[in-house]
Length: 308
Image (cartoon, rainbow, N blue to C red; front, side):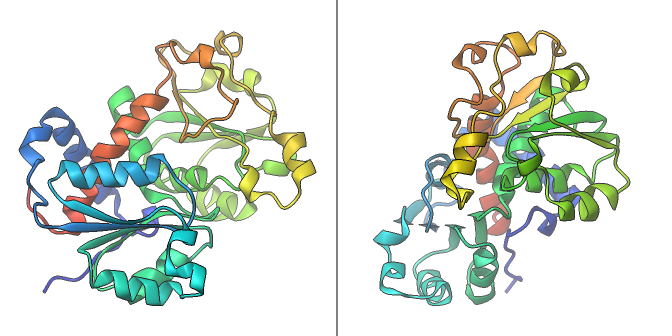
C-alpha cells in the first residue's frame, strides 16, 4: 500500500510537484470530459468547521466533475463538534466513510492534527490565519495562465497581510521561484508578520519593499493581490471598523498600472475592489474562481494516486 499523502501546507509540495499539478490542471481545463469518470466510486468528505462558499463548493464541484461523490457538513454546528467531539475523533470516524477529506477549521494546526489521525488523505481548506494551500495552487494556476510564467514577477500584496492566510501561503510558494520581488502594501497594524518576512522573504534573499501607499507602487506591479480586511480575525470591533476601508481599488487608481498587470483576489470581497473594475481586462479574480475547481481536480487525482 502506498504512503498516504496529505496537503496541509503548500511546502508539503515540491516546486516540481506544484508545476506538475498546474500542468495537469491546464490539461483538465482544456479537456474536462476526459477526466469525468476518474473518481467513479470514490467519496470526498468536506468537513467545514468554519463558513465557506467558494472553497467548499469548489471542492465539491471538483469531486463531482471527476465522477465521485461528496458528503459532509458546512458548519461546526451541524456536526458532533457541537457536542464536544474532538477533531481527532471526528477524523477517525469520517476516514471510515470516505476516500479523501477536505477540511477547514478556525484553529491553526487543526488539519495537521487531523492528518495525524486520518487513514485517508487530508486536504487543508484553510486553518485560521495560518495556511490555505489549495487557494495558493489556484492563485498559481491563474498566474500561469495569465502571465505564462511563475518566475520574474513583481507581486504586490495589498490589504490584510497580517491575518491573510492566502497571502502567507502564496508568499511561501512564490519565494521558491526565480526573479520574484514582493511589494507589501498594508497599514501598520496589518503588516506581514515578522516571521513571514524573516523565515521566508529574507531567508530566501528576495527583494521586497513595504509601503502604505498603493498608488505609488502601482506602476511596478505585474500582479496585484488584493485582500479584504477580515472582521472574523479581529478581537476588537473598533479596530476592524477603523481599518476595513484602508484600500479600495478603483479604475482611477489603476491609471498608473501596467496594461498587462493582473488583479487577483481570493474572495469574498466586501468593498476593497470597486465593481467598476470587474470589466477591466486586468481583473483576474473571477478567472481565479474557475481555476480553483480545476486545480482541486488535479490535486484530488494526485492524492488518490489515480493515473491520468
